[in-house]
Length: 311
Image 1 (cartoon, rainbow, N blue to C red):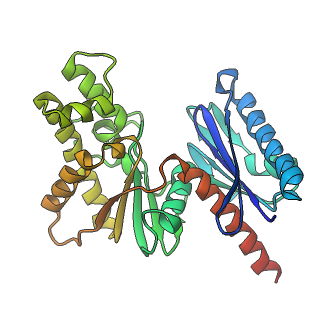
Image 2: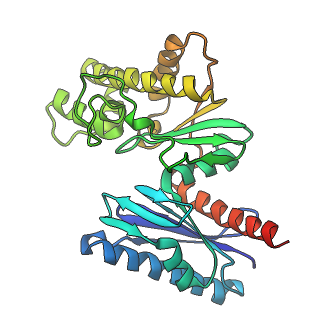
């Protein structure tokens, strides 16, 4: 059966699948990244995992994968196939595409994890049918993927979509990027966790606990939550002013709070818009499978492009 390898590399774990042309997942697997052993061990773990997937396809599906798509975190030079930098994996300037191509004997597409997840959400998830969308996962940090006509805009240097570093409160907390008051310092899951741990007096409390406390009527939790929602709305309105998306897709850990997040967020965005067209604000549909599914799409897109070039 014709298939490609789809591999989504996270900070501590990797999700993978063998994907058929119609998007069916023929085989799924997970592995640790081995980051505790250093960046070289992470790269070898990726190569070894990819090799295992190739062997599985040969044995169980009749032949090797036609191509592979790989999503990785950090700064990615997708055009040249280089994983430039990832703080949580410790690597710099890894020619990952070439290393994988040599290991697999097949073409490889390399992509940024959030943009790859956005590709999947746009084509087969919550943004399906939308010609313009913005995908914003709210996790440890905040990033974004700009969807245009079924593809993701990476920008001239691969940095497009970094909505988490829009400054929404200039006198706000210091951000690791060097600025103050960046969106992700105020509205990410990590930011809500910090704020709620302080407000509740429980150092082990996290963003999910805050959401539950909001639902139970805790006024301290509501204050923390609405402060984050207000910052998030400010950042999103800046983004929609620039990009004019038809659909705004919110994913990541905070989105798991459901209407506890979406009801006040929709209201806060609507209050802030003036001349802008209000987009549909919807939850992501694919959860933590988005990156893997998007990696599969990258691989099939690569094969389609190669076919067009050689036709």
